[in-house]
Image (cartoon, rainbow, N blue to C red):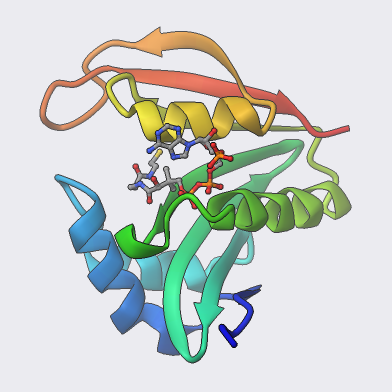
Length: 148
Ligand SMILES: CC(C)(COP(=O)(O)OP(=O)(O)OC[C@H]1O[C@@H](n2cnc3c(N)ncnc32)[C@H](O)[C@@H]1OP(=O)(O)O)[C@@H](O)C(=O)NCCC(=O)NCCS
């Protein structure tokens, strides 16, 4: 019987697996020290999805005043379309609410149909386009959701 995937808080020991998924997921992956720095910050909220001792996804965000800024999310390719990004997002939004965040926002490549669809399905709307936001010159949508 397949084991259930659980969502839990990210720890420093998770970073080898997180960095592997990051490298496979993005054209300009975050270096390891970005994750380390985030995990040291009291503002960071970070979760992983773990299945049978294998880390298969992660999400990071920072809660500052009333804003949750979602900074990174990825799911291993062979575990996509099983609702894991959605579950991790919900966990993070729940913690953000308890910390007094009234809304969440993020940047996403305008060409990233999968992520835009996932955020839309979870109640996020496009606020505006940030031209040449990414290092390779691509544009970003800024998407937003009320948490209250
Ligand atoms: C974007 C990403 C995190 C989604 O993870 P996921 O666990 O597959 O997402 P979910 O299963 O929760 O998807 C929820 C909904 O989003 C939409 N969606 C997700 N992936 C999609 C895809 N490839 N194409 C179209 N719609 C998609 C669907 O509506 C889906 O619901 P459904 O499967 O019932 O149709 C994943 O594709 C990924 O890791 N991509 C690479 C990294 C990345 O681009 N991160 C986002 C940076 S902003």
